[in-house]
Image: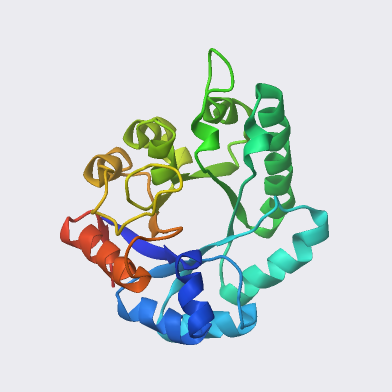
Length: 253
């Protein structure tokens, strides 16, 4: 069976600012999305957001938490997860944290510590990438290859397929190589050029049939996320879901 589709709510942050969280989330649910991934709660509490998701039948597949969680934020993160009936946190780090093998090792140690901090509470930790993890840090390896060496198996990869392609690496190859270590996929499309606006999924250069085939049996969620868009964002959100379903690459409600 194909994987369910979620929306990273960062995608609709401007629509939320112009309207409100509740109305926009209702529109997302009406478009057929199975779940959501949160990135803050503008104008609403996590508790009220959790009630809204439950009312609409939306599963919270994960929450984004930056910077990397530590003891000072543990209680807040666990309270948020409890309010959302979710047990998955995704984090990450900036470009300066992956510039060398040693900096990558230090960053991975922080992620490993965060996973160890959350694991006793039944919480999984994932790491989300941008393009900088898919640049070479020396003559032999890319940053993501060092991450594979340094990260605990308790830390999974949420592969942002668009940023992988933007860095010049084949995302289908990466997803296939990662196997079960990459259960979450961020799905976005466009020209795969930094600072150029993105497009609805299916309207850009990414080969999603190849990506999803490479992830078969390992992916748990296909998460649509657009950082910006050359067209109306809510229409792009609709088209993205429609494309993935029409091609049999993922399932909606």
